[in-house]
Amino acid sequence: MLRADVGRPHRLLPFAIARSRSSAGFAYHTPTAITADSYPGKGLAIIEETSIGGSYRTWRSPSGSFAGGSWSQGPSASSLPGCDKGSGLNLCRALTGHPEISTSTTLLMSYFGPDPAVNHVMVVGVGGW
Image 1 (cartoon, rainbow, N blue to C red):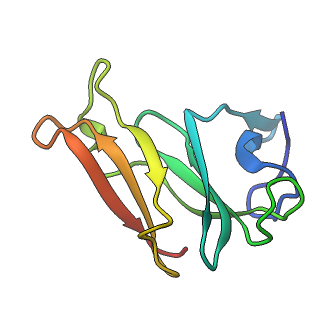
Image 2: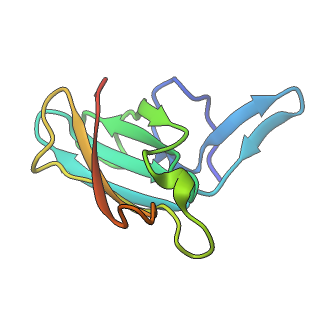
């Protein structure tokens, strides 16, 4: 496992970093899923799905190198729209970034939303990118 403070640039792959810090030290986690891609004008990005409830974190490396670049944490959220409607095996999943339709200011991601009223792939735009 890698250990790092959230908010600082990281020189190693960020997806096995400390999720939070308590008085006892670091608390580690294992992501539910990870997608990585190259985003024009932004470098490499990783979208880390941190729970089946739709929480995620994003990471960027402007250098374009997985191992040699500095990684900075980008936008994150504790839930995506509709992910609180799942039950059993029908949960929020398949969170994927789309560099081909993202802009310089908005990261577009798709995911399977388990809301029975919708029950299809959802797309969300994340600002602060």
